[in-house]
Image (cartoon, rainbow over the protein chains, first blue to last red):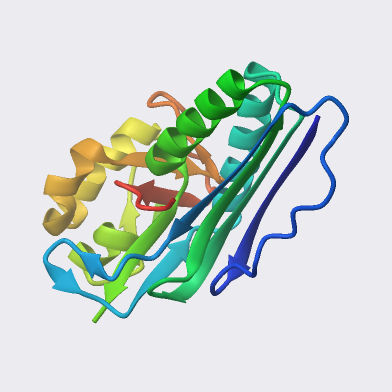
Length: 126
Length: 81
């Protein structure tokens, strides 16, 4: 089981997919991109604030919990801090699992819990 | 004892500050400190029901005592991901 969590200043660089771990039957990469609108307003970017070190610690704890509960092979999560322009990637979740079902369920629960518990905030930039 | 509560996101905007300093009785619990925030900064009152206290970078139980020197943060609705 391989788990990694990191917070990076600015937009996330393109994903480095690497080689699949042994036994992988399902490989998911979810990327969250900054949309051009927040509610009714057009924006140019989002500014992300993080409460360090709790944000990275919570991401890592969440990653370990999800990886263990869904018996994943790997779970890597990256999130941005600071300014991310429209169209750029601010969040990436990469999962390797033996089967599709647990990979998709793990991704869904991870994102729900991140949006509830991890101290990261976004602020729109006009 | 003096407690400094870090603020972020909507809470920092409402309080117009990134921290709130207040005096609470020694041995106060997380719940007591959270309740005291409303008195110290009424602008935060509407946000408190959805907020949790973190102590030393971990969410605190309501009955957890706050010790001098603890890093305390008010974590409201987050918006990552």
